[in-house]
Image 1 (cartoon, chains in turn purple, blue):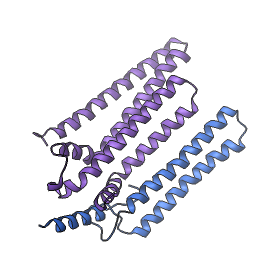
Image 2 (cartoon, helix red, strand yellow):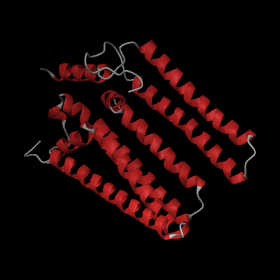
Image 3 (cartoon, one colour):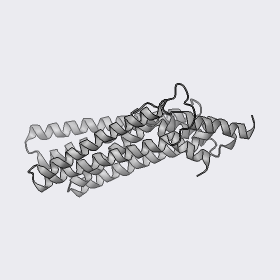
Image 4 (tube, chains in turn purple, red):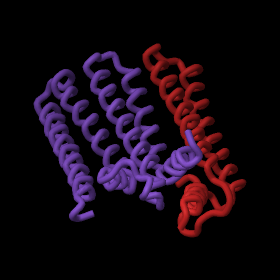
Length: 162
Length: 100
């Protein structure tokens, strides 16, 4: 790791420290829930969420660390061409993206849990109906947030609007 | 601007932005916060150890204690790694005040 890459990595951690710490907390909560449960399907769901969260953290960190020197002035040494805009988009609103991701994962996990409770645990109609309705609302919330996240990133990536 | 001057400016920017104004105070706050989180982890494991619970319930308390301890360790390492890149003067308006 050369001097600038090393400094850029530390710079990105400082810039988005809150977001990375929140993601670490989310990973631990999901891993704890996966360890505590016995249901294989539930473990699989949580493992997927952990993998996606890790991938998001890695993508944000890489985009920031790789684009930091170029975005600060060494444009002549930019090896990423047009992708540099996209990388700056991913890293410049990292904490907001991370907060949005946490709300998506939390809503999705709670929704799946509620639906599972409705199917396997609740026997009475009102309780079951409430679990399904709340699960559906949370799934809609997660989907809407996911859409907003993608629209925000696309908006920023668009060279016309950037 | 020559290449060397550009590189020096970038090195300066990368090592002065988002740095604490007072490093000693920052580290002190970090240590106090991590110690508080470590105490919570100890408390959770003590509940799991001394409270009369079913094995499953005990395991849940231990998992929570482990998660909290790992959170403290991971966050601490992350912050110290970031802090290790600071050198020289801080840049006004782009400082890092613990915890956020």
